[in-house]
Image (tube, rainbow, N blue to C red; front, side, top):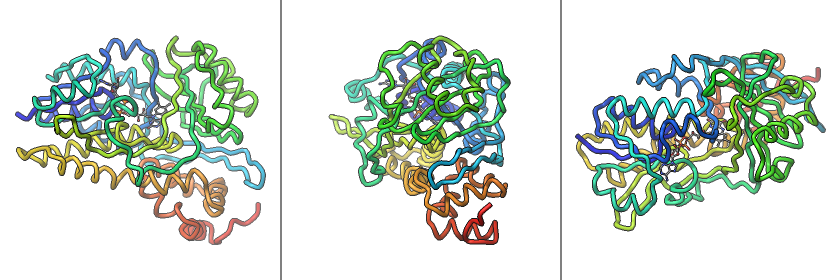
Length: 412
Ligand SMILES: Cc1cc2nc3c(=O)[nH]c(=O)nc-3n(C[C@H](O)[C@H](O)[C@H](O)COP(=O)(O)OP(=O)(O)OC[C@H]3O[C@@H](n4cnc5c(N)ncnc54)[C@H](O)[C@@H]3O)c2cc1C
């Protein structure tokens, strides 16, 4: 039986570990925290997964139907208008459900499931020296330890990384309100700040709403205090909202945190890394998930990317049979993943972050043409579709004409 070591018990590492156990591999997981520590610890991340990613989890019996049965079917995108950019406010329908589960709930449950299904768990914050000492004991070592720390072992691939002069902050809180919230994902552009996303989520204590403020550090989020109590964190988010959107502030004015640790702030920047790292002794190890790719937070892709990269790694490991997991295997595995990920990590990101005139007209036309709204939101599930219609002025005008009968948006 082939022996595989996975470092990191997040979406990428645990999904790969659980699916390898299903195929009867000998899998060891080394991760920094016990399931109890994860469940009772502070929030570190947020995840939105779209239909295709969830379908893969269902196939392997990994979906948490009992603890997190909730899913969302629609996505509202709103902009109040500014300067010469007109307002839009529409709701697109997903082709299949999307879902957000607090990582503390999902990963603690998966880590226990991994042990129950015969995986070995070693709780230890792994260093590069540990890896060097242990790698020879395994047929393959996979590092899925998130976007910092061990990720530095994998050099940045500057040719593939988007050049971004701006750094971004993401500030979020899992909260509940007395007002019943609409059951959909919402994104509201807040011109001087960035955007607010609100996402129906299941946290450790049950259903709640996830509030995310994201924007450049050159704006108001750049002065986010380094030390701040969780309640003050939520209050500061609400006061930023109050100054910018009466409608959204009204929704959340009486929000309470779901637990005392349900807030976080993150400054991770988009990066593509080389998928293979070389240990001092010459051994090769493979990166997975956030360790090798972080997209812009606006793209809401990283949990789906972690899922997809683990799915492709599984497929390639199975196909490799008894052949060695050498550097060629690792590069091929990443190339397979990149075929999927290159859209949101590259020119689709550019097109959506700074919409050209024709794409802006399409966003306004979506107010009255449901087809455009639906196609836009389903692009988050299948990013390659954005490339068909949103990534150049010509393609966007062709699509505008196809839907509205005119290559330019008619006033009114
Ligand atoms: C603020 C914020 C906003 C986000 N927004 C979105 C979004 O809108 N949509 C979306 O899809 N995704 C989003 N994400 C990202 C998403 O949560 C991650 O991309 C996804 O969880 C990546 O999974 P992963 O397994 O690669 O890494 P992680 O989930 O980071 O898991 C890494 C694991 O490795 C462990 N570990 C780390 N170092 C070591 C070590 N040295 N030794 C042992 N174990 C170690 C950690 O404890 C953890 O268990 C967001 C993340 C943040 C922080």
